[in-house]
Image (tube, rainbow over all chains, first blue to last red; front, side, top):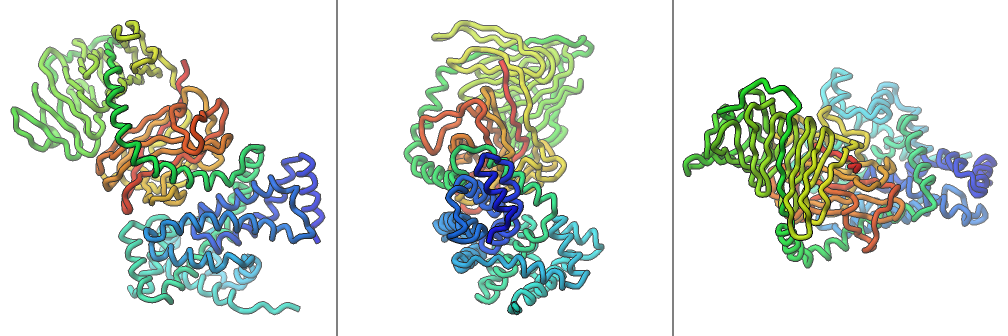
Length: 183
Length: 449
């Protein structure tokens, strides 16, 4: 069942109140970005695809029916189509891609059929991290500090920062691999 | 450092956008060791991107929502999806056209020469004359790779060299600076050629190139001859730019008189160009001064990527240029927003108006077939662009264009309309797989009659 506030925002948007759509964007931006982040190896393209998805969804909002599926699922369907176009464009130049990019495109293809973003689980795993790891990740991702600046701020070597960041990510990866137990 | 530690460090460098081509090649080599290593790196990157989104700051969240809403408010127009694919389709069409268009472009360019005869005479006098310019020799102050031809013998120029009548100077890959004892200074763009001429005071010829001058008050006017004109300066600051199509004058300080003689279909014209104004002598175009309204200007001297830019990495110029910093990109054949240099961030619109212009300096590290500039018109869902053919690698080039003259890439015959919202100004070289593109001094302004 759709959240009443979301249903209200969609109805207001369809009635001509464009600004009501901001509530829709705000409600699903994180989930959509996480969905794209797992499949798209490029942060800038993630930004663009996310925005394009919301614009297309706005244009096609009247065509959404809660009977046919969830709203986030519908959004991800739009995002998936846009992402597929990007992937195909990149694949046309496969012989010029670097090895890492080729592997990332293959991974995107592998995940294309799924809807999982792992966002909820990741947030749970972040809550279980040791404070020192969590602090480092916050500085790196929330404050957007490059490794060199982090090393200066923490009075550590760049090598220490990269290694510790990787340990924090390894801990998260191990946590994400633990199967969820649902009641 | 072990192989895995090295790979971790290189991946982190890549995430910060600071990996050099050699670093990227090293990543490829390390990943080639086994598929397990590659799978680990892909998973590590995936988690990195997920964290980027999950931990982004509230400000970033607000910015993202606002950006999406700006795009929505710009509707009803064409689907934003055409922006993504439109650029790709536009590039494909351009590639197909490029081969057959090359020869025609050269013919058109030189045909334009014959009609573009204009003479600029410059005379100005707004400061008290206080110093003598008579007999001042020029000193070569700086400039990587500059050469001098004196009495038929060519040699490298070294800083501090005194220039004499008859000397011919060719700038190297960077800008060069000449100074005079009275404080007058001339900055010559890479590739510019000048010759020291005989006569009273300061006299030079400028066969081709671009010169930015700050001229101290002169008792004897400073004379600069171009293929189409002689400029005489009493004391002012200006930029004189001569190429095959036109001569363009930008006056930063003082008053300049431009004189164009009568020609086929053209009446003689004389105008005064004042501070903050420009004038251009071009075939088939009325000679008029236009006021300059600056909109955006970037010299990157703070070493940071300006907020208006969607992509580009602040970097030290590969050859001496106008400053300590410029912007670098590592473009690939596709128009890719992560690795190109992209000005006017998506939805950071500039509204099209008549007289809207842009100029920038660029340098490519390897030979390329073209350097293209392309912008997206959000109202039309159309890409417009232009390109420079085969710029010499390793030296700075100056590119200036008027938005109204850009060619439509997706649907021919369309033109920008007043008020159209423009964004995503890509600057991309084509025709080389591995290269670096450097951009500096990007300026967008409007010229108002």
